[in-house]
Length: 164
Image 1 (cartoon, rainbow, N blue to C red):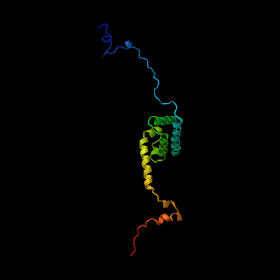
Image 2: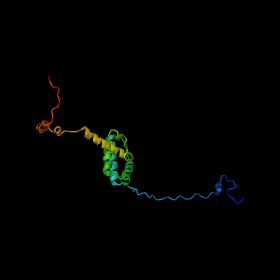
Image 3: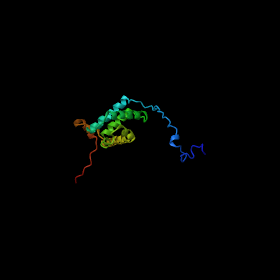
Image 4: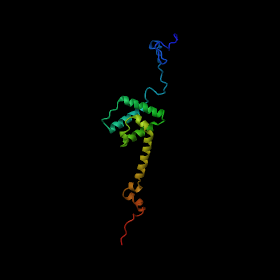
């Protein structure tokens, strides 16, 4: 029993006393294997600046720092590289979200835009359909005077109350 470091000698529950512990192994710093570029793309910066401009347009007192814009640009690059979004689709959703009375209060950074991308896309599509249904126009409504006459003459008369 005398040669066993774990029994007797002050160790309990199978632990070595502090003076007999080996030094902590050195930590090795691994290089990032991520394929993410260190600098955001010019396209990412452009779209990040667009979001900043629209946010400030909605709220002139908003504070958006250059550091935030840089992070947003990196987020745009991830949306393109990982999520396979096109820059044009991102641009359209920035414009839509910042023009919408609900979404402009909720999309205040690129990470939120990325997280809500599919939901925003569906909302945008339903808004476009709703506008098309609500505003059907006859060609005659766009014409005036003599130009409208041929179209108006072909329209059936409106039902009226008949006199007796």
